[in-house]
Length: 453
Ligand SMILES: [Mg+2]
Image (cartoon, rainbow, N blue to C red; front, side, top):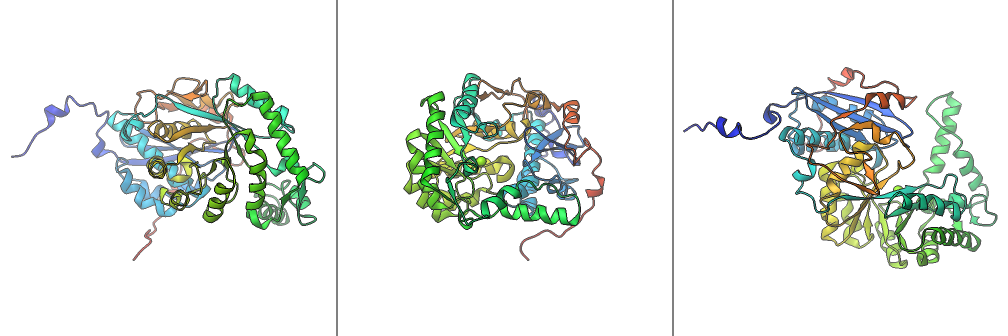
């Protein structure tokens, strides 16, 4: 007998007809100084539901646009099926930005279609709100007192967890603090002056040379910190703690490209200042060296913001190389991969912090996962000094990060009703202008994508 569910469905608030949903278009807007370059993504559908996503900070919209022809005509509610199709086209770090950003937009559409917040689709809230830690870079903070004062301003605003940059770049002008092949540090300093994929061929050659120098893997730079340099770093930490006290957790990041032994020397010197974690000390794929580092210093070791797909966290988690993992939702593969990563870490009794340096879209997407994870510690926030950051989206209660926490409402999807095009237009990236312009030229690319035959 054919069953007719018309009467039953009349009592169900679906908000849409999910089975008939189709993706019809993808649009992009590039903004800058948020404080990073952020690439905002809209996926449009045949039922007026728009999904919001974002490509990883400092990446490129082409990573999303190259996937457009694979998406047009798909039902966005088939999240896992679409993800399995496009995940082969992502890779670690910025190269995962397109796959991850689109996956988030699919969850946003599906959750809006069924009328539930994303966190509920993942199993519901474990915490009432999402703890946010405030990152603090070294610009304008040449000594520990000034860094301490900057961190104190975050404490005064209600943050309960802090991070600061602490790297060899602080030692560049300290006499006798660094030991390196003679001339190398001067080359590094010059390399930072080159910028941009523009200018003459020779300008571009110089740019590539600069990029080469700043991406040499840690053990290959030959840079060492001297005793004088370690004294200076130790004093920096002592001065920071003299301002903020010892009650609040304080993580460190951006050590610079130094090898394992230097990280151990530095870690042992500053462990008395109660460092919450040492982040990305060496490249994340150096599993054996991570194990050695974690065993050598009395401070949690952390990495993960450049790892694509939860499977790739297994070597670090199963070997005991980290005490904290630090995935970025725009690199790990989006909503579901972040949840799978958290669960994998949980199985290995490792805590999860979440890297986040982007717009409110990424912040809310990550928060929808974080709030449901028992092993979650805190989620990153870079935009404390950017007053218009909150105004990019309409829908969530403002400020989105309030006294150091994000609270998620019962609104469907990410909880974003719309984006604020006026604010976006005021902060467009000068090298990538245009707001939600046509991307039709990407509609018809065809490739027989598969990684097996
Ligand atoms: Mg980091």
